[in-house]
Each structure stands twice: as C-alpha cells, then as structure tokens.
Image (cartoon, rainbow, N blue to C red; front, top):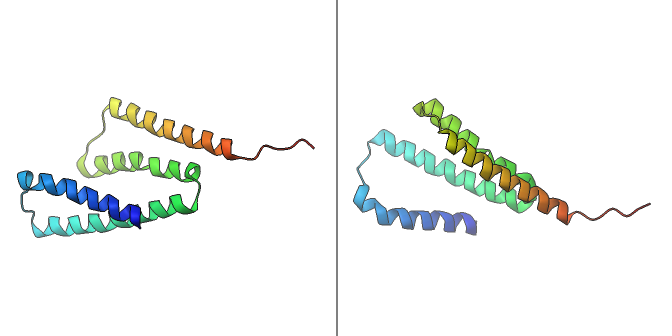
Length: 116
C-alpha cells in the first residue's frame, strides 16, 4: 500500500503544479470517465504491486510489459492511432531487455543441481 500511496501522491503533486497553466474544465461525462479511470488505475496499481509481492519478478514482468501491447491496441480501437515504427522498436527493446534481465536473474538464484 505504501508504494501505491506514494506513487499516487507524487503524481498528483507534480501534475498539480502544471494544472493551473493548462486546465480546462471538463463536462460531466468526462469527469465520470476521469473518476472511472482513476479508480481502475488505482486498483490495477494495487494488484500489480501485490503480484510483485507474492510472485517472483521474473514471472510478473512479462505481464507488466504486456501493457505496451494493450495500450497500443486501446489507442487504435478508441482513437484510430497506430504507434510509429520507432515506437514499436523501442517498446520491443525495453520489454525484451527487461524480460531478459529478469530471466537471467531468476536463473542465477536457482540452486545448482548436484551430480548424482
């Protein structure tokens, strides 16, 4: 809960500093969508933090990196927007590097097998 709290606190603090210079008041529909987005995002953050608490990072990381794919799919379905090739290449590099590092560290923690 501490990680989730401080993440939300510092995001609110930083965005609160920028808000007076760019704020336009949304309509009621947008406010409801913002509330839904904030609630679902907070719940997702909590569950992801719990996943890292109860499972090895090498097992959870691929699910965490899958958000790149889900975000691109959501952007296409809602806005008709596809990321540029450079964005896809960067996402693959980031996700691949993270998964490789987590897998390498997981293998390094395994107990060596003893010869029979």
